[in-house]
Image 1 (cartoon, rainbow, N blue to C red):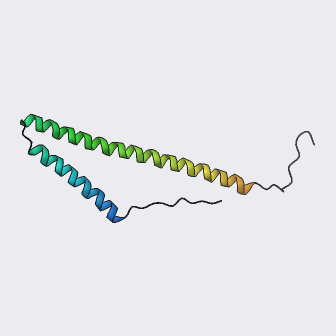
Image 2: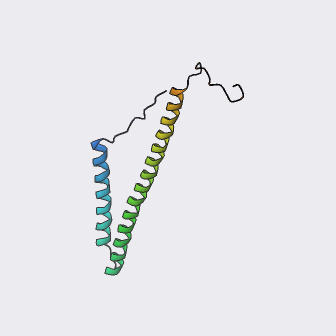
Image 3: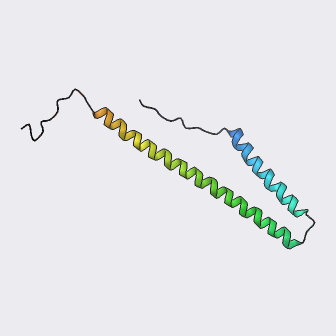
Length: 102
């Protein structure tokens, strides 16, 4: 009953695609804001809004990942405790006498 969870590893291509996609998206938004027909303060506001949205997305992703890792660690500890109890239990071992039987 020993089930070791398989650690999933992202491939280099997947990582590269994610980085490239992020770079293209930020570049496209920055180019769009730069070429917009608006005053400088409007473009600056939109640029700061995009940066805030980006940092918020990174923070949210980190919080979700951290919560998932904590859940996995607690699950592993509980599983290890249960395995220890199950391996140390012998149903055929003589039971020690209770106080009433002595």
